[in-house]
Length: 402
Image (cartoon, rainbow, N blue to C red):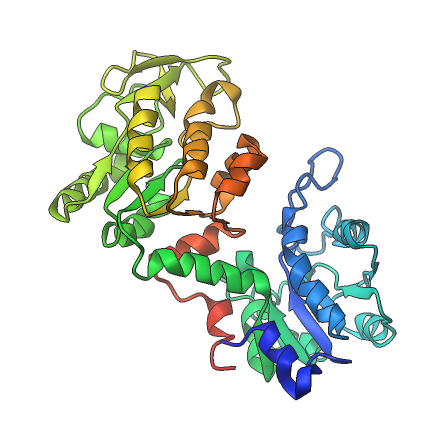
């Protein structure tokens, strides 16, 4: 798979000069529900190295992204103009956002681009053909570019037109720096991870991570399970979880996973203590043993003894992959388990990868020092999990053999 640096090196280093370089970015940033303001611009910042590189090489840069899940005919609140304004604010570039992502409007903007000007196409998902991986729609996008670069790791697991059908129609196609970095870092986890390898999984449901668990059991030495998904495993061991979230229909699966871990000699670390309360709206919790949840109470975080056990495994690890919080970390009273794991992870010598999503958000809450201590924080939760599962990612497959 080629990279944007490979394409730039062609023709004695003039490979991008005066070319229309279409960069698929992931500007699907979180917005404040009341004000519509961007609450975290990390995805825009992560794309800057690739965009800057293309501009410095003399390219006419065309950026494309989706935002949210617009309903047919509804465009309110999901225009990429707000991302264009933030990009301009971060860089000082003039960012032009045409009224559509296909047709005459973007063609005119791209034709007139001057140095320090960028074209950011309007939300790709305003056209249902984007999610349908429609070839005709992809052909219209292909009319806007000479070179295709994918730098949207958060979208490469989707077989959508701008990610899959479009690159297959462009001869010169490559990965951007962000996508290249993601594949290298996650590749170290997927292919021959240095041992001991500790995998930490959290979040709400076992059903969301069955394939990930199966894949990790074949690779890791220690599998730590926290968050609400741990409740299902504890219930499968016969512990009364009272009001805790438990996937009753997944109890047999949890028992099978426990047996597989034992057969493969993978240490399965489940919570030995929990922080419980009457409900998710509680402002404080009580620490109890995992087999002593009081009636009318529910588990909302792992307890301090469990955190200590996790830390002991992390200290010995040469590779760590973490996806999913250890509890309801959005609430201060139930955030300690997740934040303590993040802090411990930042201090170890081994290679550490956070698999995007809520885990990435939790690391940021833990502070800048913690963020700096992690080797790689993925920008794509779903994509990183599918890569760990061993699935072929449509956006990556479309770049191979270019």
